[in-house]
Length: 250
Ligand SMILES: [Zn+2]
Image 1: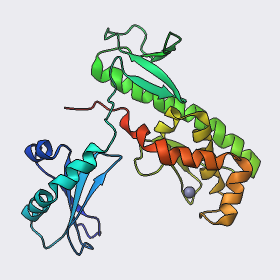
Image 2 (image 1 turned 180 degrees about the vertical axis):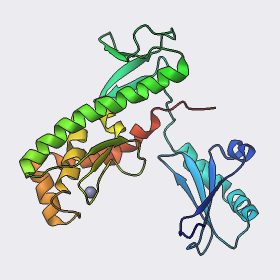
Image 3 (image 1 turned 90 degrees about the horizontal axis):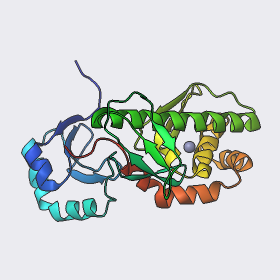
Image 4 (image 1 turned 135 degrees about the horizontal axis):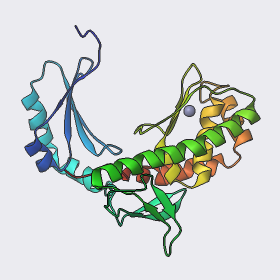
């Protein structure tokens, strides 16, 4: 039996999704006192939260009353950029062109090829496996960079980080658990290296200070003097990194 206070999540029908222009999630939450509505920028989804005693049809009615607001919010989000041949995607802040030759690959790995005007990322295989290979490749590149930067900052701050995990987390760029395990978004490898470096420094500093107090920021600044610029960059352009990847569409 479920005793947790977690919300019950229902996804509205495909017809509803098409009408709204984004997936609609209805969450029945024990702690919710009234109906609320929000648009998740990173997931490009509409989330309706309703108190447990409300019927699901109330979520639909509530959505209808606020449909203009929802559409406006969705329109203001950057266009998603699913992995496709011909698309441009930044790698370490530099635009690369994705090439999907579509052949059954003799060479299975994704390759980076110097080319003009854009360096290229060659992802072999038919679409679904090419997309998968590309995702895994980005995650590996992110891991390589993050392992290096984490080790560097850990040596400077005299701490021993635990396991490093690469994820596609939508709410945070990185996190640090009480056991010292660090976790990062693969999307950081899309940003200029100074941004990934700041997030690595930030999480490593949490190994000494598990809070965002003055002492914490002094540590971050000590090991990453350009932290203010990096924070500003993430505020302005960070959202853009969430557009890329996945299969997109149907
Ligand atoms: Zn933090």
